[in-house]
Image 1 (cartoon, rainbow, N blue to C red):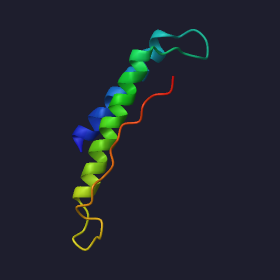
Image 2: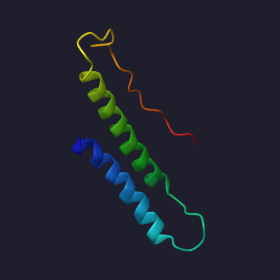
Image 3: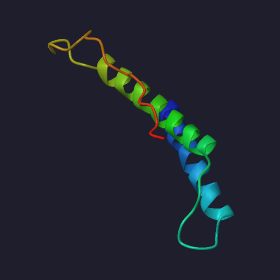
Length: 77
């Protein structure tokens, strides 16, 4: 569980840093690199959570051992 939470902590720190560094105005600007880091962290979290949920299925579950689609979604340009 701690490994899953560490992905969310990375996202929180990235967003917190941007909020504190861009104090003027109501909007903030993120670079493509920052957005990519956030997306990567979320994708890793989703993959790990999906894998863990699939591994903890009950023995009577019909989906036990079924392949889970963890295809990464590309960003929109």
